[in-house]
Length: 267
Length: 181
Image (cartoon, rainbow over all chains, first blue to last red; front, side):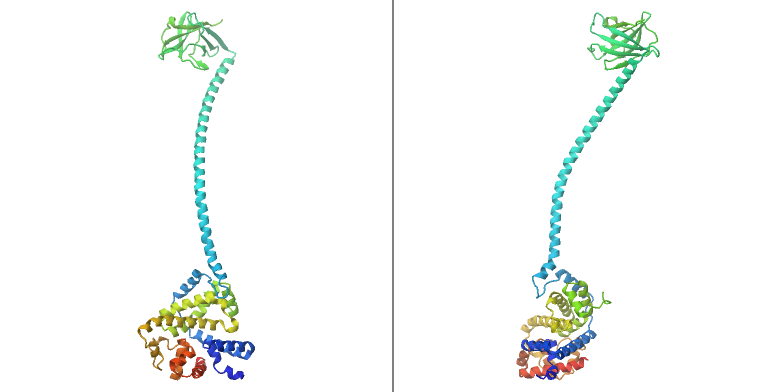
């Protein structure tokens, strides 16, 4: 075959423009592989065509670039004829995987929401219970503190060496009754401890302590039965103490028919 | 844009096969004009040409694996994708027209003045050089390159021997090549 004649026959141009039939095309490709001059001539024409086409380029519409670039991102890398199954997996794979991952995360998050909300409700109820019991304990503690302080101050008075102790035993009409007066010899303050007194039958009655000064009763204060030491009125001088049940608020002079206890101050 | 970066054709093909979007942008920026021109010469309608160009770039992206450097340059491969897509579009469009207007096929190839389409692309590329050919040669290029008919089909349409069709087309292409310089 005359290669030069073949090269200048127009077969190169026909090949490049895709105008050869199957048979001619295969022949041309085979000859290209074995004849570098033919390949070089083909390259030269292709390059010339490309340069000419680039020089004669017509600017496509402005918005098209964006559309094209978007469409390959939307369609992804797509597939090629060479490896059809691989590319789609790669292309849609990450999108689908991301979507699936999102769904799984969303579902997981929802389940956790329900779980954590129920836990929240449980712990919130427990917290309320704890706060309530803590408040209860605090108030109980305060009450205990108050009582402890009362006892401590009472004990302090009793331990005071200058304290005169006057036992008031029950009189004949009330033999079981007993009270004790602690009388500070320095300050003359009077403290009363009720050891045993019957509870008044009516709420409008109240016990009253009397100091007997030179045979005359002097009011030393009224009291209700309670724990600990009751601070009574200051009594500068007295030979004896007595307790009667009077109307609430006390009386100016004692009703001796309602005398419960009586005790002399030992000299 | 990455016009300041230049790739060799080998690098470009390699990057495209690795699904490099940057390389694809580069490809668009450098070749969209040339390919648009080629499409426009065939479909001769701006809007249609835009659609075809988009389709062509998507096909390039999808089919880059099947590009074989032994068979030609990347641009030649793209040119033929563009040309085939243009002809396919034209045929599917003309198919509807030809049902109503059967003489269109005859009309196009009845001679030198058979150009009933928009003339706005006649001054570019291969179309511009067509007018330098003899009318009986010009119609063959029109049918073969711009309409995508096989030599056998052209021989039948023009009622001339297949060998004559082949020779005339090859000679015409050689002539066009001179004008393309």
